[in-house]
Amino acid sequence: MSDSGIIHELSQETIDKIAAGEVVERPASVVKELVENAIDAGATAITVEIRDGGTSLIRVTDNGVGIASSDVRKAFLRHATSKISSADDLMHIHSLGFRGEALSSIAAVSKVEMVTKKSDEITAAHYIIEGSIEDTFEEIGAPEGTTIFVRNLFFNTPARKKFLKSPVTEGNSVTEIVERLALSNPGVSFRYLMGQTEKLVTAGNGRLYDTIYEIYGKQIAKSLLPVKYQNDVFSISGFIGKPVIVRGNRAFEAFFVGGRYVKSKILQRALEEGYKGYLMQRMYPFCVLGLDFADESYDVNVHPTKQDVRFFDEKKVFDSLCQEVSRLLSEIEDISDALPKKEDRPATVVSGAEPFESGRLMEIKEQITKSIREDSPYSRQYEDVFIRTDTAPVVPAVSEEVISFNEKQESEQKIEQLSFLSEEARRKHRIVGEVFDVYWIVEYDDSMYIIDQHAAHEKVLYERFMKQLKDKEMTSQMISPPQIVTLSFVEEEALRRYKSVLEELGFKVSHFGGREYALDAVPANLYGIDSGKLFVEVMNMLSEKNKIDTDELVMEKVASMSCKAAVKGHDHLSFAEADALIDELLTLDNPYHCPHGRPTIISMSRYELDKRFRRIV
Image 1 (cartoon, helix red, strand yellow):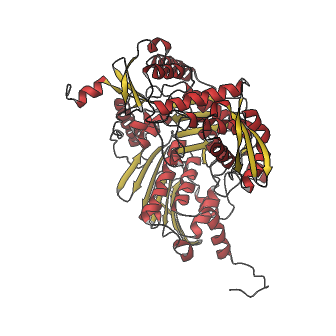
Image 2: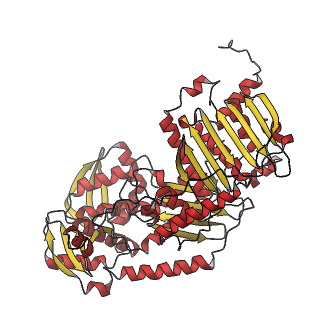
Image 3: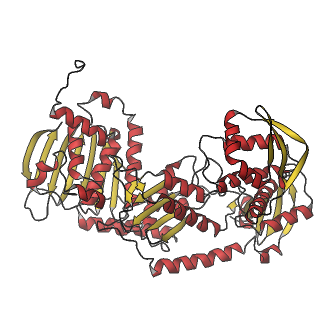
């Protein structure tokens, strides 16, 4: 501990270690920096190898342009980079990282060995630097490109090393980084090894769909919806998953801005708001989405790792993504199979050679692409336009191929929508009966459809409520005598804030003294429910820490509570009532999910039934 009040000039070694802490947090951050450098160097093939979760060894080999022998030492100096030359360039960065900055930080806390060669040089440079101290600099024979070994990470900073997780956990973080880098760069062939085990090989053929297939497997790949949107400022391209693909966390959400993986609450919220009504609460969708801007309308320099991003027009970004996702989901018929199939794994791919073997690389690409396409008809339909380049980003035009594909898919979706809830199909429905006083069974077109009466009624009531709001047809039902409710301090604050909105919805409330309030009227469609209890629930919801910003969202939240008036399980419906309920489902934009995201309808084909009863083999 230094003497209090005395200012010391830090040594260069200490400065380097402090700087390294901003960039090198764990093995995954080392891999990220090195792979991004390889991509910026023009690599079309990259191999990543780790051992012990990346703590004992990280190797990144690429077939990029390499570093000139005369620049090798300079590349390991702090603030040395080939990416910018002045402060003005910070707002015009189209590369992924600052090569020198990363190498300096990594070398400060590990033993780094580099072999690199440019095409116009006869020999390669072999450089070893340990804890920022040079050990070896010599000329050797090697192919064009760069290989970097990082050994014994944090060997000289034991305090940092002890905070690393287990090798398995650290290795999983590296895997996540490699997968994201592969998704954001489908034109680069990746080979990833953990110890002696090959975990991933991608074709690098430029098709995002094929990369998703290789990482996530066939079951997810066949449940994708292509996204292709553009306005005057930016474009959005990639894929979102049908609501059948869900997880209990956001691990399946991947966003890229200018080809760089980013974390963005704006993008997360926009995506999840677009899925609202299609997924259950606390369930999250799948997406791989890239945003490209025609100008500098965003900033990635808000954090040393450049994973955070700030948009200059957040509302436009939010609204555009949310509306496009909602539009795409509204155009599909989303009836789940009653018997979900086991997830298929992707086709087996060949083991790849090192990236600098260009002839072998082409063979790998061809074999991987062939194995994917033979196994999946979907790959032929998706031609990806989400390919990063090192040129200034421009808003890409929608290709004729994508347009023709979208038109084809829209046509197929319209045909699918005729299969159950279209007016034409409705005339051919045969209501077979009810089971458990909960589910109605309908036969149609060689399939059995099972309707959850509670979920379906919830959806109908919710849509009725929202339509009445839109058409300004809300009515109140007086309560006699009024119900007296007691509100907490924060609930009182919420009542004052949203009183005009609540009155517009049909609630009439007056102060009764102290913290007690008289509930004089409720929305007509909620009459008959325990009105006092419902109102307190509404106020509790509106007083949550995450404040609701708009009157529209308040109305939507309250509308979701109209579901409490829905028929419950074990409430018996007559055939006529069930028939009328199905009729009203036909009129809804999204009849397949209740307001909370639960399915209203599932199906089982006659073929599946015949298989279960061994009528077919």
